[in-house]
Image 1: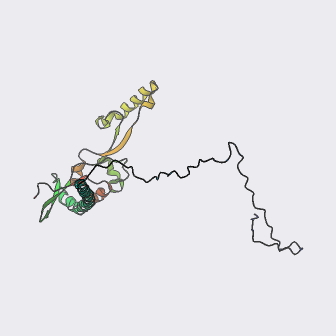
Image 2 (image 1 turned 45 degrees about the horizontal axis):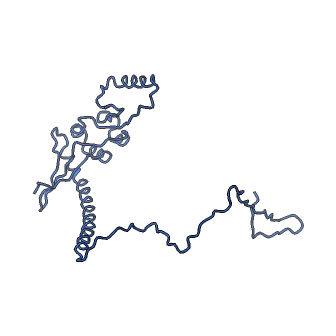
Length: 238
């Protein structure tokens, strides 16, 4: 393919050998005018243009003695301090939860009655890390399959909402009920009115079963993929 080379020289010595062909550069033709031509803009002269980042101005409250300004200063300062403290507190809570989780599973392993919390002692009192029997739903079982494998069905089940509570359907006849429901809506040309929200939830006895059946290592791996909802409590522990 011939390419345009604006710096190339014609080396043809009349023999036709070694000649460099200079291709003509493509000519870009402007789009044919369809409307009224170039974009017309109005000139605003010396009128100040509004800046996009300009904050809205509000009427100021009279403050002859500066009392309101002092209060506003304290609020701004304390809000910034509170934001910084809240961030540091959340970081500490997450780290404490992470560091106490192995002990929680080791202490609970093989027990029927598992303590809901573990305590951390300090000169200021106890801090409780509470591992609740509460879990969020999953979109599917893929995240827990590496830990549970073919036994995933013993710990999790499908849940759904079809403007009915799927958890309350009898398992042995759920398929038949859904088929009849779909057929009924199809008979009345109303299938578009049906919608379903699917998820995966732990079985009712999941919390107790995991401590009895799974090893500590399996529970730690499962918690990485599917963490227990945990809380840090300090009130009433001094």
